[in-house]
Length: 475
Image (cartoon, one colour):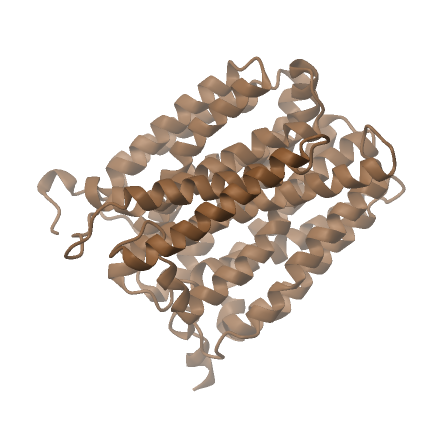
């Protein structure tokens, strides 16, 4: 469907497009983890424990997962720029309500609203990039896009620590307002209002959205409550409800001509393998920024500001990889890079399990820099090769599907880490997690991410060769 005159915006270079979208993604990813260093202070204000406040993190991620599936169709119906801008406004409003929260229930409700805005920002931004950038520029564009998105979760803890130590935890939400306004202005000026004509017979899958929403909500609130003492029966009930509605959704999706989550995409080899591998790896990525700030504060005795500053090393690693990723993927190809680096990524996460107050700070810093380097390369590769075999007609569905499970696995990582901490604390008859409890949590989530190597090895040797340029080197 050709854009009307009012839909046309100046077409920027791919770096400009990527960085504008990254502004919003940075804000969103920052918000996922900026709570981590503020949890002890918020827990005192709300009269609960810091591990229990993981619900404030997972409720946001869960809201993303529920509403993301509709993002592609909404963007095609109303225009990508319009939806992107509206999502930023909703996100800013949710942030303002978070800053006014005076209880755990209030913060969870405000985070759900934030998630609604975030659910449209991330996949619609990625959709804009995929539709405006040539394949030969995709790795470079994705590197520009992903660095701010990767840095957001890393800067979150130190920034949150600074606010908690020197100002007030509510500033972690005030900071979204200027960032959001900047993204709003830049997207209005430079982002084209892309639309895609609906396929014949395509209609919005309201039933599928309801079924998938209940399924996802049931499963992830079950996982969240499983980490809380005395909530076992409720967790089991919610898990059974989630599983039942998930089964109903799969039956519904097989009959619907355009399901809200197109499970048929899993028949595309590179998409399927990237999905499985990325999901396993993201469990560790979600747990990492949740565990480190808590361990540095509760086990090492550091202030919130000091704990957050330590984690900046990972951001430095992610930034350094931005310039290296295209060359590495061109030299190694996607399969080799993902397989070898996947092992390294897991090992660097595993080393964090053995951090102790006796370690010199330079050693902890070096491990976290290496972890940031490895993590940045892994997700640049995964987020790029996933779309290698996806045609334009299915791009909206693919970005919605991929981003939904990306957020689900980040949420699963927080839930898994919180559950292991709770079990270890219960076995040790402790009210506050000790260093050994954090060691157990790091090792469990690291073991999960290491399984991704199995699926990375199953990629074809020439997977994504047109994107990486690897085949050109071999000729």
